[in-house]
Image (tube, rainbow, N blue to C red):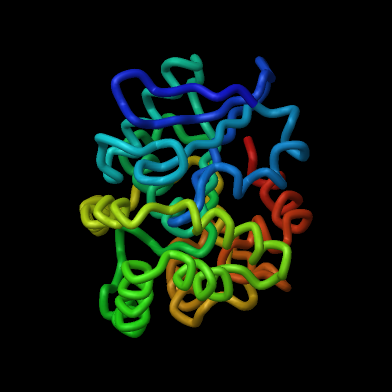
Length: 255
């Protein structure tokens, strides 16, 4: 993978050297970075694969806003001469992948959202059950990133291997980067769901929290043409917990 920096932004991204075939962009969850998709790189080596560090994560530290992620992805596509792309997002990555699909529907080949919710019809009452826990976690992070990372790995990953890798990524997350999440609500409930002429895969881990499961099922029922998959043996970050299962399912929807 070749590392590149998007001109006039703080965004870093990585792209393989495959020059033909469909393009895929993987968008990571909060507190992680592009390396959470390392287990996908070899399997999808025959595709044009792009990974990205979201603003405030990994190497993408500096000026920028998280609600501009769709714009950043579009700029990357223009630079790399990619007309259409397969979007794959996990957790917050699923939210941002949908935002791109809302803003640039003609540039979407497929949309895969893991552990996310329907941006366009999000019931904020559904989130209330998690709010207290999220506030406690944020307070813990302000006091100690190490303590936060220890708790967050258990919430996010199910297997010991995925927990350890996610823990190491969380340790690199800077306390100052919490400010980037403040504008995330700017991409929620802002658009009407478009008529999709591309596959939509909605996924959730067997051991993810109840809110994530319920939100995913509600979304799937609202879009009956979508495919819904519950990944056995996985927590929130399915691609890290059960990469072989995830890769095989994802390959079905790639166009």
